[in-house]
Amino acid sequence: MGKLAVAGKSCCESCCFSTSLFCSLLQPGSPNIWALAVRLPPSRLEGGLLSGWKTGTPVRHPEGPTVPTIQEEAETRIFPNRRTRRPLRRHRSGDKATMATELEELLGFLSSPSPPVRKAAVDIVSGLTGSEEGLRSLAARADLALPALCRLLGNSAAGEGVAGPAAEALVNLSQNAGVCEKLVSHGAVRTAVEVLYKQPQDGGGIHRLLVMLLVNLTQVDSGVNALLQVGDEKMEGLYVSKLVRSFCRSSAYETSGDDPFEHVGFILVNISKMEAGRKILLDPRRILLKQIIQQSDSANLLRKKGVSGTIRNCCFEADKQLQNLLSMSEFLWPALLLPVAGNKVYSQQDTSKMPPELANALSHERQPVDDPEIRTQALEAIYLICLQDAGRRALWSVNGPRMLQVGYEDEEDLKVMEAYEQIGSLLVGSGEAVETLSSDRHI
Image (cartoon, rainbow, N blue to C red; front, top):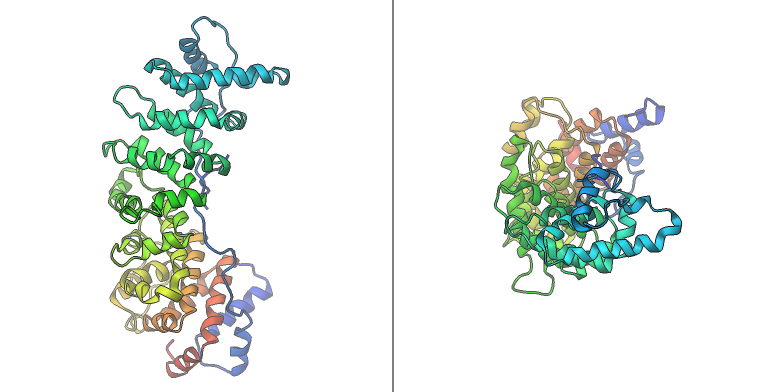
């Protein structure tokens, strides 16, 4: 079952050589060193655009419907004449036809006119999604399960309590890309967003589930297009704007430890893997990316990972939207450079060449960014910016190469070191970089 995976330096001779090489990169030296440093030619980033993580949470019965007390009680309410009934997964292989019939019968009760029957049925279905076997069985009858669950998700009538279990079931089912496609065709994206914003702001449980559902649905292109509202000129980007606003406002929940919108960052990663999504996020009239970047200093790791991945994906537009990106330098450079600037307190000589937002942060002790994935994404974003001449000049203007040098000296993760070296080879390969290095011995 898919889960949100939260995400050293070898002492070998080759790593020591790489370290000394990058440190020498920023010092005026012999032509031989420059030639060696170019051994990593600028190239397209390995792996391309990032995708957010699939979310799956066996929220009710982690082991599926093998928990007889809850399931049998619910089944008794639906099937009052069946005093003994085994869970579906306990049927022998020879009983597959019977099991399929019973599953169809159960799914039929999701559309019962009786609220208690619907509630009992959706509780059982939610429990089934807690096991791999249950997920397979329900996916095989997606034609019955998905439309009914989507209807129940949209039924947030007070007192009935079916939207929550329906959301739980859909989160788990939507880990399957094929199921995602079918859900999108049933309007699940629109339903999830509409229910999300009909709920009171203190409805954290259902909010979290709906956001997780949207993370999974945007794993497929059709889900991204539905969330972006592509093709509807008047509405395009409205859902995304709402989610960004909620993402930024809900950061106040961090102190309580209950942040229902923390997974929105992964939705933003998913939509930014498509050009249409990056266009909306980078639209200067909406200033969405600027709002997102300001969440990069969050103490919540999920938020930080979502923000760093979104920035990185948006930087694939640097060849067309560099000036737009650099217009938010006050927030962009701290988000990208502080995670990779190492752990030392910088001297006044270094900070005097930096803008205040960087100089102030680097003049004091600070919390290091321990997650290597965030550091790698920040470096890859810097690399994409530095592919442009104006991007390299902007990096030099904030004394960025000095920060990269210090960060490289402290780095212990080999993959992150490679990302540093890729930027280094790009800087050294540009004539302006060599000229600048030669003219300033302090960098």
